[in-house]
Image (cartoon, rainbow, N blue to C red; front, side, top):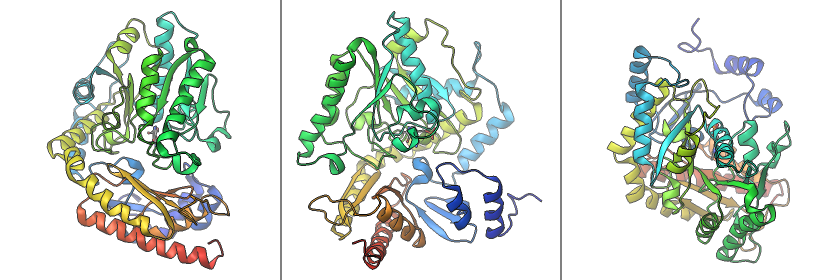
Length: 461
Ligand code: PMP
């Protein structure tokens, strides 16, 4: 039987899944007990599960389905390319048309002198490339000791040994021997949680200046690069105070270190520009890309590299690459996705309309008694759950309890919203309509009401 074309009932699928499928970021025991949600199809911003229930996908999958689900043009681009040339590699002085075309398109879309692309299969792989590339860059310039990369606590840069080390998720570092050497982390610009009595502006400066302190502590001749997401995504859609990025840029300009902007979430229209670096006025030497590059229709990532770094790297043989670096089908799908984002004015519409519409609706959630603040940038947003907004208090019990309860009520009411601790976050497809944004916010409010009642009933409020 072809199980994909003609699938068995949900309970049977769940049993088979639990028996043979190991899931990322999932507690296996809990999964076995509850059974996985089985998503069978999707269209626009709506997902359908194996029992026929519909959900508004407030997360665009994992922050990636920027153009929405069900675009036949991408299926056709994949099919055409798979018939023409399903696979060839880009190693050893070989190339193919889809990789050439996509690299050229990305050089056109990326700002300033970011004109060169090293392809990977994912964001994690691309950040692994970045680690080796910046260290190789400095080694080629005769400074092999300049190899330390500074990142931030609570950053997310991927799950591989390298990218997981760049990330600052302590619960990830507890497993499997992370971080690798010569990567260190400064504090994050998370004012709500860590700002204490400081104003957001003072706090933003304090956190940015930690970069300068760290460079001086290590010595400028030891530091290769600083990496950061323009807006921390998996860390909870943490938008830095307005003073943060200008100060980071000043520090990067003053010291001879490379700036890597991890645009895996912020790229391809999410913040209302093609790249989050443009929205926040950052001038990186390298940008990590993935997710929205293909709207998740094909696995592809990469590093967009500035002229100066590319020139140095091109002077040696960079002994690095993946079987699927520049995979022809994935490149063809990404190109078609970029065509749609551009020609249908999807990125422009975020900037001229949808971001403001979402911001306006979303901020209304701050009036809910369970919510401390509700913020957005472009088409991503967060709300903080708190028992007392005025003191920015955390709940007495385990962090994340309230978030998990709220998330479950979202599911029950047809909305996919993720929780990071006690922050609820959204990042819907960029093509979401005004009416769908209204529905998203209505369902979020309803889930908050139900969570509020449950937390009270359970004595947690
Ligand atoms: N960087 C950032 C900012 C991300 O959000 C992610 C994925 N959530 C990654 C890197 C890793 O990408 P991937 O899962 O494709 O390896």
